[in-house]
Amino acid sequence: IAPADMLHFKGGVFTGFVTDVGGRTSHTAIVARSMDIPAVVGAREASRIIRQDDWVIIDGDNGLVIVNPSPIVLEEYRFRQRQAELERERLSRLRHTPAVTLDGERIELLANIELPEDASAALEAGAVGVGLFRSEFLFMNRGGELPGEDEQFEAYRAAVEAMNGLPVTIRTVDIGADKPLDRMSVNELRHEHALNPALGLRAIRWSLSEPGMFRQQLRAILRASAYGKVRLLIPMVAHLSEVKLTLDALARAKQQLTDAGRPYVDVEVGAMIEVPAAALMLPVFLRYFDFVSIGTNDLIQYTLAIDRADESVAHLYDPWHPAVLALVAGTIRQAGEAGKHVSVCGEMAGDPAFTELLLGMGLRSFSMHPAQIAAIKQRVLRADTRRCVARATSLLEAEDPRDQGVRLVAG
Image (tube, rainbow, N blue to C red; front, side):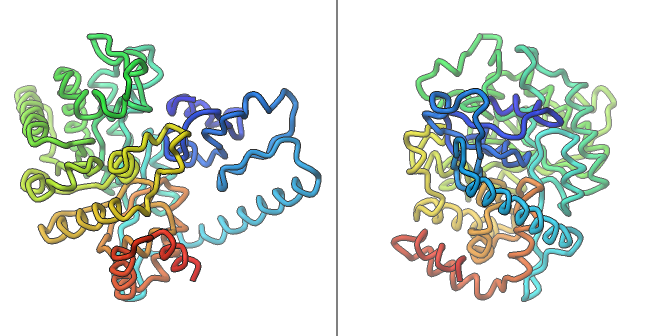
């Protein structure tokens, strides 16, 4: 199932899905969670074992598929469903409570969205802005036809207006790897045939290879900035040359709008930190960018050389790995020292197991899918950042941070 295909699940007859291939942190799995669709991705033998008319329990929380469960197991899961609904109702009461820690630190909880209509769910969940608008979903399921400037502008404007003056961070198209287009470019680039598409022409690399398309998107985003607070986010930056080419393209798009008499605002420009090279070059990058956003999903993938869509190595994908934590902590610290805004918009931001750790590292801005905001807010309200700093220091020095982190969360 492609990530874009799941958009058809909304309002459809499907209530969940299971795939043979993929990993828990593949984009398909992430989008399923963001839409609150129970899913188990990478179950390998599922299509061989499951037959038409079988009863199936899809336990997305634990990655389990139970085929033809016994009455006792079925009742157990019905009880769990009821308990989860009660917990959601309880947490939903927090949605308009400010996210402030016990020691008075105000924390920014933002939403990740795929489409303009998701903005209403973000507001309903209590988000104070959109930390990540994944614009690539406007480019998918179109039979290879790319959206024009006006179509993109209307979509961005709709999201900006729906957020009622709250900030909206729009990421330029992040196509490639597990988010392929039907037609990658005029040169008929076929990422599905690449030996390793995660290392290929994706995200900002693809945008820079299609300068006409890229300027169209930049103009559309800039035009939307006249209707509310917009930030521009660049994915998968690794080279200083990419930074300069991107800023040149942005300057040209601004000039084109000025020449055409179209209004726009001088938006803040940020970089996704998701390639280890970007984390290691951060002091240089911060001279060019107004803010940074840490994409932990890809940062883990590239740091550990793990294809997050490959179920055969999914067990090695480890957000607790000391190298990953060191890169995240270093990015937060250096951005803070430079006076630049920093957020985390990957899965770690919406995982309660990491909330105190990220607070202890100095993070004050989290972006996640709307369904996770209440649970993270509850942890924020119970946290004391002074204690979190001591815990984070201990975890960053540990040989096995996962073991210590799990014990801290359990405690």
